[in-house]
Structure formats: C-alpha cells, structure tokens
Image (spheres, rainbow, N blue to C red):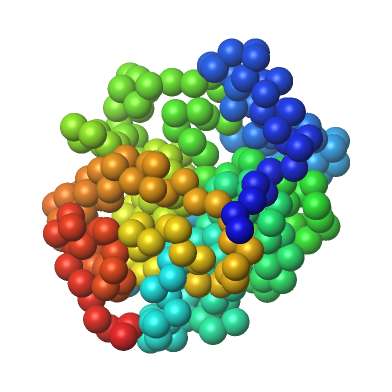
Length: 290
C-alpha cells in the first residue's frame, strides 16, 4: 500500500513557509540547516563546511556519443541494462540501485521524499559516483547522514522557476531569455547548470543535462509513464505513492519539446521501454536492451 514518505515535521515546515507567501515558499527546501552560495559553490550544513558544488559539465561532458537516462519504471525488469555500458547512464531515483550492474555517469534525485525513504540506497553508492541533487534532496540527505556527503562530486538541480536564494519567477522572465527555450505547452533549460525546468519527474531534469552535453544519441529507459499504479522495478508491495498520472500531460509536453530540440541539434532521441507513453510522441522504440 502506498504511503507518504515526508515526515510530519517536514509537512509542518512546508505549511509554515506556504503561509509566508508563494514567492518565497520554496525557501523551505534548504531550511533548516543548509546554506548554499551559488557563486562559489560553497555548501554549509548547520554552520559547518560540508562540500563545494561542482558543475555538471565536469562529468556530463560534450565528448560522449551516447547518454542514457534511466528511470525506475517496471519495464526495467525486462531490460538488459548492462548493454548500455559503464559511464554512460544518468540513473534517476531508484534506478540508483542499478549501480551494482553498471557504473553510472551520475545519479539524479530531486524529490526529498525519495531521500527520506531510500537514503540507505544513496549512501551505499560508491563515493566516485557523481550526483545531481536538488537543494531539498541535498538537505534531506545531510539531515540523515551528512558525513556520507563529504568528498562526493555533487552538482545542483536548481529549479529555474523557484531558484535557490531567489523569488519565484516566470519562465518568460527577461533574464532567462538565453537560458530557457519555450514551446506552446512546455519549456526546458539550455543551461541546466544554471537551473532546470521542473516538469514532475526527475527524468526530465536529467534529460536537460543530457541534452546540454549534445551527444549524438540519448536513450530513455525505464521512463514508462503508463503504469504508475504498479510498483517500480525495485519495489515490492510497499510502494511509494506516485504523482505521475496527475501530471502526465505536463510531463509529456516537456518530453515532446525535448524531442524537437534534440532533432534540431542532430541528436537522436530513442525510448527503450515498449510500454512507455513517450512512444505516443513519436519518439522511436529502441530494442537494443531487450
């Protein structure tokens, strides 16, 4: 049975910040205890130095012909992930559990609820695995085991609409003109190290980092979006709740815009999941992992 993964104390924090007004409510992501200086990358936890952020371009580089973005949809159970090879895949959320089968390019987490539920999975990752973490995910991890963060390569997943240390803003803001590409129903970031457009799944945020590296090919695996009532591939009956169904239109609009941007850049976007809703966008099925 699905249950909430957010501790009661965090629910109270969320409510308190919402009462302060929507423009600054996202400051809850780093409160209490986390301080991040975006210019220097300096991160402090409870007044002590924790780490210095990296740029994602340090490890998601422009020299890669293939980048895979792997979600945690049920279809992964039937896929031969090893065929992707080492150092090519951004593993999203519970796909981090695949790190014992392939060496990840990075692991991406943006929802604090995943950290609360599966922090042991993240702590168990080798220190050499780079991480893409939102401010909320970074705070949640530090609150549970800050020592396990030290020495890791971490780049920030910052929300352009609700930027760290800044007020909420529109994707049409003048200062985002060179960062964001907008379509009729979606937007995405061309400079994800400056921030990403959040669409409701961390896989879309990871895709923006992959697109920015301009590989020849991007393979999407485990991004089913069609069976969110089923357990994720690594879960049993005690599954975490999913909001994918409610936000599916927005998510698909984001991936469709990404498909168009990839095509204009000469990048082939393909989907390895035969049950994925992404196939309805005209993203072709790739059977290489079957």
